[in-house]
Length: 379
Image 1 (cartoon, rainbow, N blue to C red):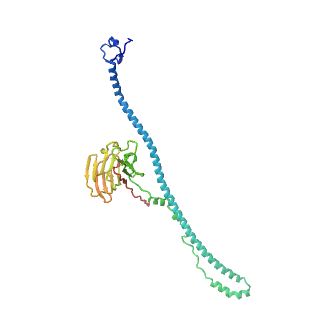
Image 2: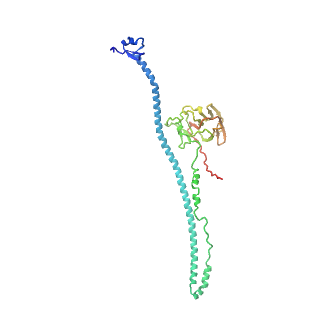
Image 3: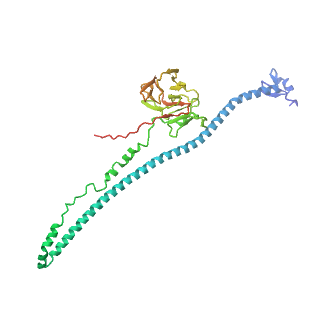
């Protein structure tokens, strides 16, 4: 409008103006800043305004990247789980095929044995029939002879008949038929009962989605050991990222539960329980009750106890963890010597998950329980 350079910035009207406008009545008593200074100020303001957006963008990108990683891991998990399922069913199929073959062999063996007995019995009876038939035919031939000839041969014919030994009365063979009931009776139950020898039940199954990347789990999810280099795993909310630990797949909010852990020669481990509501990221002490073995010493720790020494006469090879949720007790025992190690007295209000941690290569293993089959009679 005035053919002048826009040299200043009116802070009141938030607009660029020239020297003529600055001195006009329109901008009387307004505050001004040089263009360069105003530029720096407003650039800083804009930069400051962008910081939350940039932080949010960074976070969203991280979450997106983690989602991509989770999507890829889902495929890996599925393929691995399919492989393990097939392996387990292959074992079951093999067992059933071998059991079927064994029962077929037993049936064929019984068939062969009883057929042989029947064949021998039939052969012996055939010989007796043949001998008796020959004697009878000879006597009947004499009976058809003329009177003179019959009388001439009578004594010899009677002697032959009387000399023919009479076999004892043939008796039916007991148990000659196939014992069908033995082969078919309760067949599925018998196979199922025998199958317990090849199957096991573990009271605690470890959840791989909670395992620290530096922890290696067995294929059957019953043991865990420290690995040198952590695997690349998604940072899902359930995963523990501070302690090298893992929790069980099932939590308890009532009743009494126990499980045994084979520690063997492991020199650095923690066993206990973790509350469901505790944040899995960072320190989990506020929701953790545990027994720790490290540097040759045992300690118990809880949200209210940062470490109390526990006297153990002999390092156990197995440790039994007993959770009485209703009674408010968490106890540890040496099952081989039935020695009590320690008991926490605590009123539990949250679901509690079995917890184990180790930074030793010697794995910790949940001990499988014995499987038994019983039949109850109903009155």
